[in-house]
Length: 262
Image (cartoon, rainbow, N blue to C red; front, top):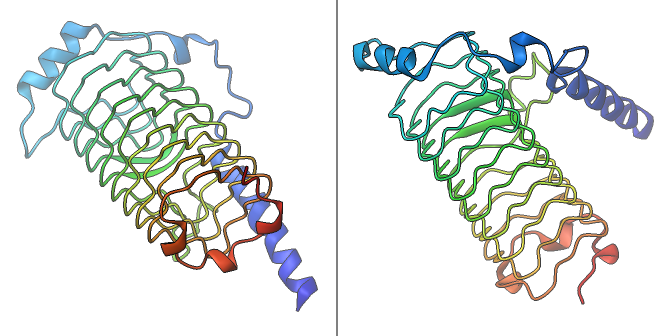
């Protein structure tokens, strides 16, 4: 049984890598990835014609490098669109569809993405400081992203183990800056949080089941009712946490003996 379990673990890891590594063999310097085929005025014209029944649709469009700050893009569809280095500061993207979209180095500071869908989105190094992603579905790659003071309250970043046709799709926040993040009641199960900065983050009621927290910094984090069942805490910093005595399943976390607590 141990051999079968190990084999299954390796198989899942291989599938996960293939499912989420969309950047493999992609020329990130090509015109398709760095240029725009529309102007801000073109985008505003499409927004003006949109309605609740027929939302603005930018599926597959090249919008990289544009300044779309402050626009109301509620419910807009950006499926597989390119928004690399695009400025969306203070933009309203509530319930927007950003599945398989490219937002490398995009600036979404203070943007609202409540209830948005970000499935297989590529958001490495994106800036989302102060952004509101509460209730969003985020199964994308945010490696090295900044979400200082942002909110993912009630958001779902965990892997859906019932539907794995595309592999182990889950949120990846490796080396992300999540200082003062509001993650209350968020689903972070199986999420990759290795080396992430979670100082003073509010993880109250969040699920960290089987999450990867190796090397993460949770100094001063609030973990009241946080579920640590199966979470890997190897070399993680858990200094002066708030509510650790009320955390769930902390005794079932992995590598607790390798925690840094002072």
